[in-house]
Image 1 (cartoon, one colour):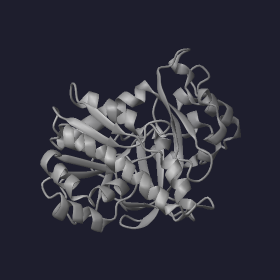
Image 2: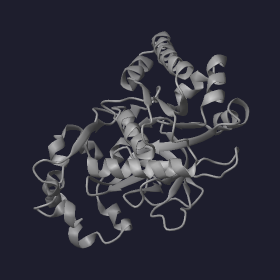
Image 3: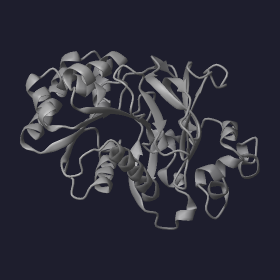
Length: 344
């Protein structure tokens, strides 16, 4: 709080916003529970210049590795500067998760994720570089906003043709390159498995499939693990742009038909809670509610962000700040707008 609200180091957006808060962040925020005092300012960020979100403490030439945007599902996109301080921290945390899963360090990655303006692909390249020297990252770019636009318009044939185009590009890499890690959105994985030739290639080459970007139902997860890719490690990631792409990684060492639990990857900088959307109070463990995400790092501050997702509240692991979550899925409607996942 001192960093983001001190005139010399603070974030211009929050320094300006402080006068309208009903509390003093530097005096009254003493615990993670106190972050509930903050209003949810996420919608205010839709038209804020990115320089207003950079803490002054980084000096006149902050090391910005990119500007990432929200998907624009519920209105105009929000734009957030990603500073190297947090990008490096996020890559290191992902590298640790990969190591625990015994992911190979000497073969390539194939990623079917968007690059700019979402930034997922660029962050995956940073994680690959942190994890192993010289890992080749093959990317197939997506335009999820265009897909959502076509989906809402009912242009099913156009969406199908676009997805086939994505899968065809992935097929060339799978056929010709030494790929051990496949990073893919859940909807695109569902389309990959329609092609027997690609299922065979993945079984032969890939040792770790990492899915994310959209929710995966329990039946599909079980089917992939037991019937389609029985010898391949399958794990999920939950990420949110409004936490600078951070989120949670799937808790390891659970059976095929166990619930998919996400523990926060960079706790305590990014933490979860699950609340009753009507009251804002935490729901009991095992119950469903709205996912709330706090981001608190040197690079960025966004507390008490009510996401457009529902989740089940799960007891955290030892020494973890905040909740773990499971069964994440989007609201059918959020802020008066229909939520469409599309391919991402």
